[in-house]
Image 1: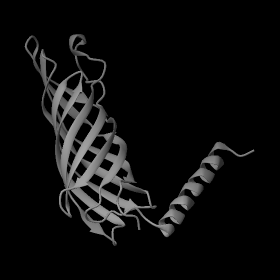
Image 2: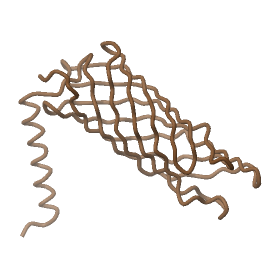
Image 3: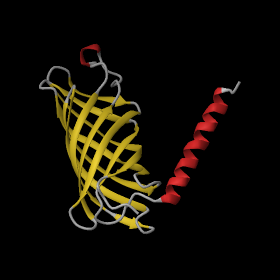
Image 4: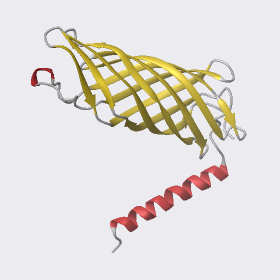
Length: 203
């Protein structure tokens, strides 16, 4: 009987083989003028949350590294300038140390935002670098205004899919729950991504 490690090894080998064969048969086009969608998941780094409370005054709490997940869609405005829409869910963890009256059972937020990105296409559209900036509104325990700056490194692996890494900085300088004002970050994030072809030409 195969051990769990052996089974996972066979799965990894099969996935790598499928990616390799897909890359030989064709590739999603990451070149100029091609729209692209992506699913992303990764980690947010450790940061702080500044709290202004009318009863207890100013406080500062820490937020441990935790998870972020999202989807994005990038549409070309020109051959290299892209406008993007993002929907992200950030789990920002339980602020510490805080008195009982300010504990909220963890801070999470659903963010809707827009981004501008610049495409640097390499290898005849098989590789891409996308630096970008964005702004969004996040709703959870607090209502937040958020800014981000990041860069994506992407690679085509088949006619319909690609993979990539996204790294950047996320910051919410303004937030409130109508009683308490907060400011979160800045904090770094690192996410893996799976890219999807969106009615673009296929190689």
